[in-house]
Length: 209
Image 1 (cartoon, helix red, strand yellow):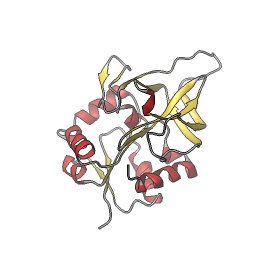
Image 2 (cartoon, rainbow, N blue to C red):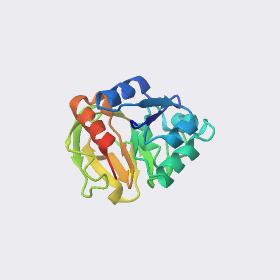
Image 3 (cartoon, one colour):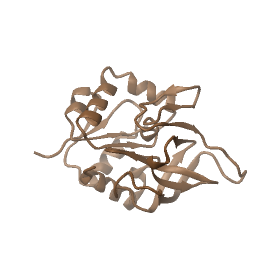
């Protein structure tokens, strides 16, 4: 049977574009779902996210049993997991936008406002930018160097540098991707990153961490 990929619908993601990109990358069965039972049975899980950390967290925790189903399937069942943009930021311990909001705490760290050290640097960080591999390779070959499309004002600052899979530069270094075991998150939007993004999604569909 074809793998089932659960694309989590919690009212905070660019679902149509992400679903289309996953299908274009070769996903045979994308289930856009808000059903924890579907997530619990999925072979792979993708958590998209756009907007504010606080609102996204509220939407995700607002679905009864969803966080528990994700945690069980990923940490007990070993399903590969991909977080996109705010979906990546939700992996953190907490977000600092509009007060302190708890995250999943799957990868320790904070999500904080990008500090503008140069007045020529615009916030949000928007548009195409380089993706450079981190010193370590916690994503085991999943992330490759290239150019991707970013759109964010807040950034993930991991507590452990060994979880940094890739970096980008916007008036200073910003984390472009994080990874730990079978969990990976990307700050950029693969669904808006053309060939680079589709290539990443294709590798995720084959990823066996």
